[in-house]
Amino acid sequence: MGSVYKIVELVGTSDSSWEDAALTAVNAAGGSLRDLRIAEVEKLDLQIADDGSVAAFRTKVKLSFKHEVSG
Image 1 (cartoon, rainbow, N blue to C red):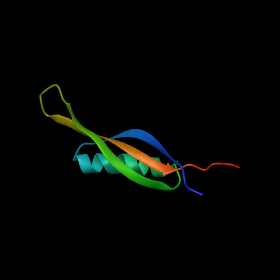
Image 2 (image 1 turned 90 degrees about the horizontal axis):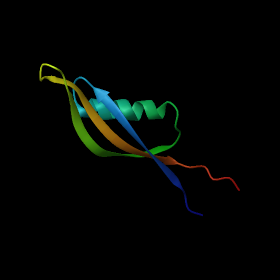
Image 3 (image 1 turned 120 degrees about the vertical axis):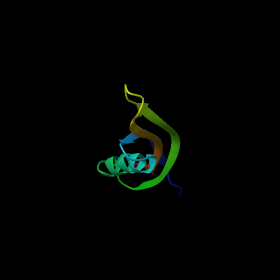
């Protein structure tokens, strides 16, 4: 029998890098989801402050985890 995986999208933020933003999203998901399998970076963007500087790095990730099917 095969497996089924569910995919959710999360956006993590960081004031230092896109990598840290991705880790923020994965770590948050790991707190409530079991059997995380893959994190795919979907989009990178920046939040810009009023003075034109970078306020935050944002990384959108698609996370897949094993879906438990009953029966």
